[in-house]
Length: 381
Image 1 (cartoon, rainbow, N blue to C red):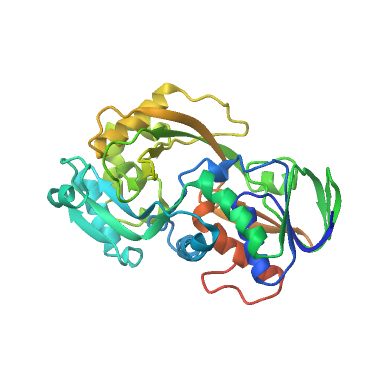
Image 2: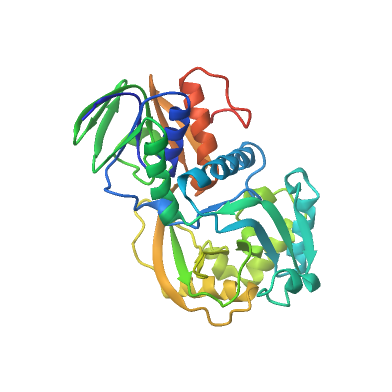
């Protein structure tokens, strides 16, 4: 086993793979170490929805735009199917439609279109006829995460000097050296992407950053019998996605949601529904926070998510065919990068936006480590 590389990546989730790609594109020999035999974590338990519209204004939005472009550039070579494009942000209430109109008129609404409710059914069959309207964004794309991450991993090893070592647990990191269950690896550049592991590596930094864990409920629903052309969101997403925070009418939406859907807000529920090639819908999600979240999935939370789905789609009795729980690190920042020692970077996305922003963050980190000019989409965190 070769034990010396130009760059070592700890963690083979989407953030680790994004850094491996960025390093390999700079001509570095890269090894990725991961304790699992295959991808089983947050990177495959999500929607595979590379979300741009609604991301926080500034660097997060720019990172999402750049990451979307990277995804679009590699899916063909990697054999990753793009199942949907764009976003349909549905407004159930007139107040929500006003927020979407304000957003569309702003700088991050470029390319977006507002469709009034009476025109939705003709353009998007399957939506409920009582919706106030919707914002259509052209920016997003959607892959099937449980398929895309393994394909991305295999493609990196075929196309670049990237080596993956699975079943290797990393115990400690120092400048130039990684100590693991498979022995010591060395490299000039080391990037640690621990995902939801808050205690093994650099626990002091993670604790200082105020990082905890977020548990989310996810469902797969049987095909509704009609195509859902774009990923769907609804009013609840307006109060969770920071990109809408500056819209003057948002407080009115928040007040009405608090009055009508307080239980949904308490569970951190907002609707995302995406469709796969078999017609089934991945639906979610909820947000519950704890240092060690319990593994259980109360039915009441799932029922609220399904009720929100049925409030947007003409699907009164969704049939759930699969349920699972996701887990990701959460903190006061969208993401952060720290240098705990020379030649080592600790990188965490602490907002559930890894698939949407990770490729851009990887480019920033590697450029910073190599002393290169930062990429044009933004400065390192």
